[in-house]
Structures are given as structure tokens and as C-alpha cells.
Image (cartoon, rainbow, N blue to C red; front, side):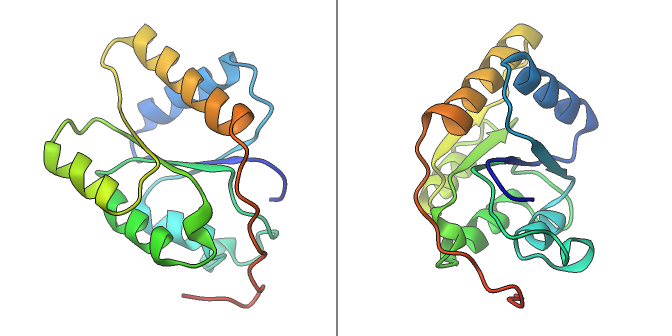
Length: 153
């Protein structure tokens, strides 16, 4: 996938559905790619496994849950922010975690924003619409060099 798109890394099917609905409701034209765990997020970003033939081009923003199976969101964040190419991609933690330790570790590892998923449906929809509008439309992304096709990690 090339062009401006959003990567959503989320394991909860209900949260995926709500997030996609909120982004669509905000009239976002950016496509959204969905991965269901941290390992799949890394495979997507590094074009490994089922994503090996994915076209060049990184997401405009990554919406990342913390509590995911296989590889948690904090480890995905650490990996992204240590990579000289991927570290320029904005990452927004979109999580249910209100734990201060998760908030602190996220910012220590370079997260661009930390948003706790509101429990109220309307508040959730509003928060995701605002995230999508800012990161997908208003924010000017950093120019990023293309990664070589054969890169694996």
C-alpha cells in the first residue's frame, strides 16, 4: 500500500469496528490497514510473512493498543522508535490502560500521543475522529526515506 494510510494495531474486534466507524464518520479518505497483534504489526511494517509483497510506503500514523497478544504495544513502539526509518512515523497509543506506568513507558519510548479509550460510545467516537483528523489530515508528516525491499528484521 502506498499513499497516506493509517495502521491500526488492535486485538479487540469491537474496538476495531468502532475505530473504523469513527474514522469513516469523520470523512477520512485515508485507507486503514488493520492488524490484530503486535507481531502482525511488525510483520506489516517490515514487509515480512504475509506482508512480504506489500508495496513500499509506510503509514501516516500508527494507532497502537498496548495490551495485545504475541508482542505487546510497548515492545512494538520500542522496535519502531529504534529503527532509523520507522522512528519518524507518528505513533498514537490508543488504549484502555489508565496505568501510569504504561503512560510513562510509552513516552519514554517515544510515543507521539497517548489516548485512553473513553468508555462512553459518543466520547470514543469523538476521540477517534479527532485523532484521525489531526494525524491523517492536519499533521504534516516527516519526509521518510524509502526502505530497501529486501529489508528484514
